[in-house]
Image (cartoon, one colour):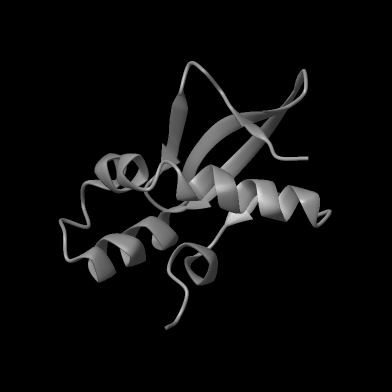
Length: 91
């Protein structure tokens, strides 16, 4: 079952060595997800944009990130952490 976005679109920057937390929903169940900081920096580098503006990178890929989380969730992953290999796959 696909996860639904949190209508509030809140996110929490944990710290510059950890990542960004955000919530999605499985029905009424709130599911916390994380994007590794390095994954966002690597994505910004590939996009050839300012890798220090992590929020902009997160926002630019706001459709892809929850979709990755949903696939991970459907695959039964207990921890929904997006990494570079998922956000910036090798071509």
